Image (cartoon, rainbow, N blue to C red; front, side, top):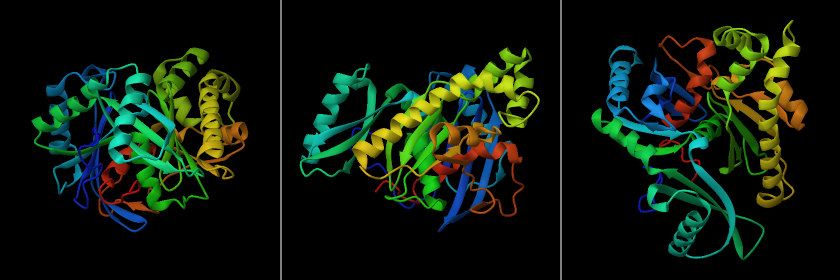
Length: 361
């Protein structure tokens, strides 16, 4: 769990399952990984609504616990073999910074990070859990430090839900970190072949640069729901029909392509600018001379037709949807979800392998 560095970031080699709690759905998944492959042991989802959460905090712990209990009792495919849960927080709900600091002892670095948080984050450090990791750069005196700070009320609300259900909450991390853990299993990502992960969620587009570890993260405060609303307004149709148009036609060639593209471009251009900013930071500050090779789209909004081509043309970085389903993750004897629902489980699957594959050691 994110901490103040008094406990380790990972608990090693114990089975766990991913528990992904959002304002629209709650999802669970347990995997049995082996090499670049994994088999789903159990999965399920249940619809929810924004009433149980506000600004990432579970405001109605009892209702959230009842929904998860219902999911585990009635809507689960397969069987969980552990009560050990790993959960994720959207990048949009956390404070992240990448700064240059001199080499120093772990205690001195922890104190320096806390001081930086107190000076740069608009929330009292007493109300935050924080963690950090370091990256060596071509500088004998300095290092890059990536800092992540999460409001305690978010993490504490997760703990309260798990306590009610008698679940062992082993780890809370960002969703982009969970994505990176899963991509690290089956994508050929390395120190000389860095990728950008673009997670299109319901309320935000979270972005990270990943090589042997997650180096830089950022977010755009609009996501799949914003795209749907923009299409609905432009075409003067209901949001339900706009969602169907988004996942069926998207910005690929269709009779409505021009209008849909006009509707979503302001949002997508924000993502393009953030991708370019992060790629530039990585290539200038983290690994000079090494260029980002690909953009991998994940998340529930990854299935919008034409998105990959648009990002490729706008950023000049090859872009594709990253999907492990079938080739790398199989459902064995379980009936799989509908193909359109699979991208929604990717972060949950990444959480499920957090204690089996230590990307960030």
